Amino acid sequence: MGPQDWTQLVQHLAAPGQADWVALECEDRQLTIKQLEDAMLRAAGALSAAGTGVVAISEADPLAHTVAVLGTVAAGRIAMLVDPKAPDALLAEVVERAGATTVVGRPVRGVATLSYADLLAADPAVPVELPDTAIGSIFLTSGSTGVPKLVLRSRGADYHASMCLRLSRFPIEPGDRHWLCVPYAGAPFLTLVMGAIFARATVVFAPFVRESIDAFLAEKRISSAYLVPTMIRLAREHAGLDGPGWKGLRALMTGGEKLDLPTAEVLLEKFEGRVYGAYGMTECPRPTQASFEEIQSRPGTVGRTIPLRQVRIVEPGGEAAMPVGEEGEILVTGTDLFTGYHGEEPVGDWYRTGDLGRVDEDGFIYITGRASSVVKVGGNRVSTEEVGALLRRHDAVGQAQVIAVDDPTWTTRLEAFVILREGAAATGDELRGWLGEQMPSYKIPRVVRFLDELPVDSSGKVSLTTLNALAAEGAPDA
Image 1 (cartoon, helix red, strand yellow):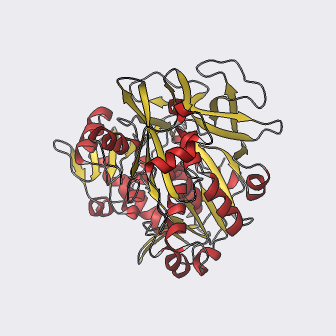
Image 2 (cartoon, one colour):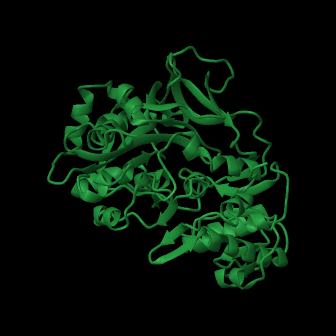
Image 3 (cartoon, one colour):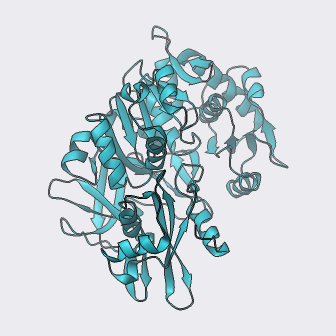
């Protein structure tokens, strides 16, 4: 029988007779797979001695963070991953909600705290064997529109999530170097950190810095990377995507938010045969994936389901299947499906994503928006994502996000936040007039606000919470 959880996977890869390869790299520090195993077992020893229950891990060093997570699983405890950049108040709140009895990294008042040095100072422990149905981890949702939920995941589901890259035919092979610049305390840990380790590749941790990205890719010999569309737009607008580092990428994956058409067109032009579109969420990390050929021949698709996953399109809020080609709510399931949210009922067999989409006659899935992005303006149904996507087609617009805010007259009104392309000029009235030539008046934002950059949350996505706060403050037009 093969590995059943992350602990067993690391031990399997580091077994005597196996090659010793670099699993993790951050700046000038590395951990080979055998060093990772040793650190994991020492961390298990420290965490076993520290008690039982949930361990909250909020460690700024990605190598220490990864060791702490694996050590927690090896100790038979539950690892709750918290972004090290999250506010201290949020860390304290989720520690209390989850009933965590130990913290690794940042201290929380009244809770025992261990440092990375404490983990490595302990004697190695024998991993605790538990059923694959036992809860192994807790992940926080992004909380972009409110308080994050605590996503409960079983040990078996976490292990199956690490298979996603290989099952989806993403070209990652032993010896490859995969760049991780999105927060490692979130869902990317499931698929990108553990997925690269599963493939015997090296995870290179480094932040996204648009001014030096091409030089970084070349210097670090990065062969594959995952970037959210916002990052790709920022890099393209700053210095383009034509440097040697970009050209050296064998595979570029994008996901996390909807890929706008202008960015998709550039990717297909610059990275022919090397672009992969990913769709997923913390609750079910990667039910579908699309290759370059599929993206090119079927614009807008997020691909078909990968092995051991399923997708259904149903009537929003209901269970009735929608006909081929018609929009409905997306439901997903699979071997990596989460168990449920902390404090709520188990999820059941299918997870309602809240995403709207359709499926074509060949089984390709298309995301058309969020159920929560569809609002009523003056009694008319409007998708904020549709309006934002059209705004981004304007020659002067580099980035745009449309939100819905309360209005005493219309119940809801739309407001647009725009970043102009370098050297371009446009007024709010000009953009509103341009939109008015292509869509009904009730879909036109009442206000267009200009920003130097769109605020992003810890996952790299546009922060709707911040934009709603700016709207409430009456952020001035440019």
